[in-house]
Length: 522
RNA sequence: GGCUCGGUAGCUCAGCUGGUUAGAGCGUGGGAUUCAUAACCCCAAGGUCGGGAGUUCAAGUCUCCCCCGAGCCA
Image (cartoon, rainbow, N blue to C red; front, side, top):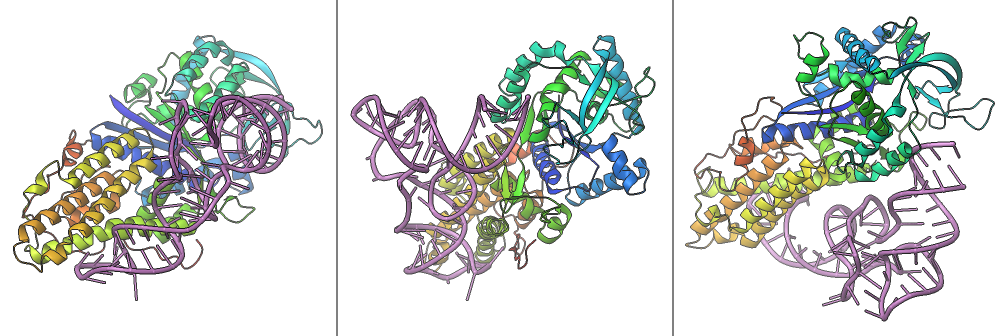
């Protein structure tokens, strides 16, 4: 059983923005977690490259649509590389194989009798790539989300008979785990309750799209084509572009992680399309929230856009990942606040976690021959830090399973806090000034080092870089959360208390996390 | 206009089926300490729980009305 997870296929209308990075980072954490647990993971991301909007953007830039898409999708690829995203696929919907998958899928839908011709008349927003239901003003209506003029369309299109799937979709979204977070389910339920209407899946006079076989002059509606990208992406390098072949590589998806704005496409249209083609449905659709910045919507007009590439450059992977995953409940909207960003990074990562490791390691080295001290009592699972570690482990594993990154992050941090507290209680630096306390000190330092090791391992899915630096500092091997093939459950076993070897050499400590000094606004 | 979700310490938020002095983190102030990245640890101040009415022995927690914000659908 493959754990397949997807980000949306990002629309290449513009360069990547922070929202896309946020989704992708979260998926990366999830993918790493599943791999560490021993799952075979297929982590899919990609680019959605068709549609009128792209065509126009390219024209405006004096480029061919293909050249434009090549340029922007390269930026995505580069960004994900620099963020060290562990995606297994980066599908582009202009991939030649995708066209064949779409054709085969369409043939199945058509064979089900779900394709009919119809006349589509109405106001269209090119930015949304959507028809809007009768706007109030008959004259010059504009799109409420994009505040741009709508265009009147009157054309004969192919329609997908969504209305036939009313009951099945109702049943689907009633399933407890399907739409998450649960709070968003209402919205979709409401929409579906009003009655599903057939929707058009083709456009005429739009060259930049995949031609609909057997229907001269029609190209596929960009969403129809884009959603199928999830399936094309399943194909391995040498695979023939065959639908069944693709499906065998890891369908159905375990989860589609998306922004809340495209929930309807994923929770209603997409499942209906799959039902029509006789294919299994994804297990879960998770719609996360949006990011604002210092309380305001990010946008070009406000000039307050945070560029993910620059953010990475100035602050580093650990800092940004930590802030986004640890401070914002995944699912809710969140606000990026620079002060809080640096406060949390410095307090949690540099001070609490980094310093804990640093102080302990230097004591151990000083008094115990540059090695992990011998332990007796500290090995026991009833040691207070062993208990704290077990607790943290439970909460972290549970949180990550549920995509509750925040509670996972907090639980890992909590272990480090407990370790620091313990250290202050025991004050080994005072004990060392007395006679006959060496064994006690050895035990205490062992316990804290062990807590540090487990903290590092628990952080591995969230902050692979920091985790690695911590483990190296402890002289430990580093699990590879980006490797597709992971020895079953190794990581889980390493999380057991007491695995740290007494006598193992400790490298000379140096801070594993630098403080973030942001003198200027980002 | 209909529906949904929010409005709790300066900030971000927890508070399950109503029940002792309303919690956490950050920020702020103070103390302790020196192993450590001016770090860690401890303590404290700070809230008419959006407003009003009601139900109840008892409401942040239930009901109704109003105000504000976000979203979905018209």
